[in-house]
Length: 239
Image (cartoon, rainbow, N blue to C red; front, side, top):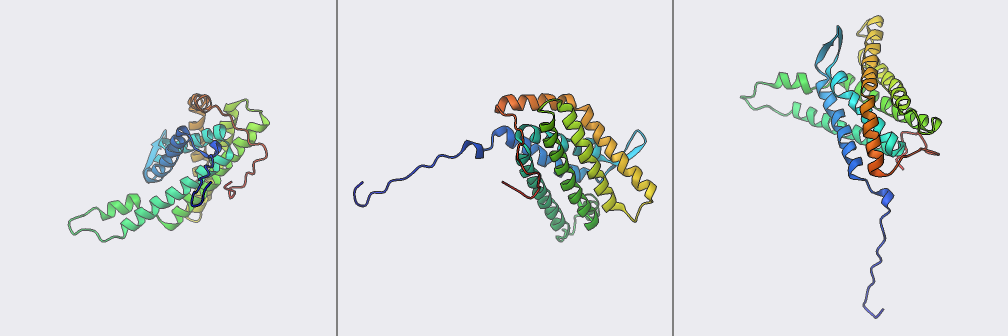
């Protein structure tokens, strides 16, 4: 190499650090269901005589289903990354809604009260929602990850339903307790927790055949089936 010449060294990118289009699609759906569920949750619906937030029966359970798919196919580390991404995106959405709420309205715009009713958040409900999401999602992913090792990859239905029972149970317990303790009688508090837990868990059980189809299709498309041997279940490691 002569004077004044420079040689560029090309360093290959590890394929394991790249994200496939399928992973990105599942991540996008997961984050979307999470944000939408918090918006539609303001409507309380009557389901066979049980009063629950609309998100409980329309959108939010999908977040757990796609969370199961992420952990089952890509492993706990990828699921952990997506859970934190969902948290950050939800926080961004709430910040945007709140900032918009306090912007001065045009004189002819008469929907301020409606906006605050639908997109406004009290600090207590917001804290309950965020805390319940983190506790429930990480518990769901951790249980599914460890059950996959115990069952050696068999009995997917056991892993998805079992992890959902734990994750949704903790989610319902944390959210209802933090949001309503002191404002509801103990019996009503317990009934609300159990109702939300059973409705969301039943949703998972009903759509288990669809979960099988999605998981099988993704494993074939990606050519992977991840087992989390030696992987830390700490929510705070982002390796």
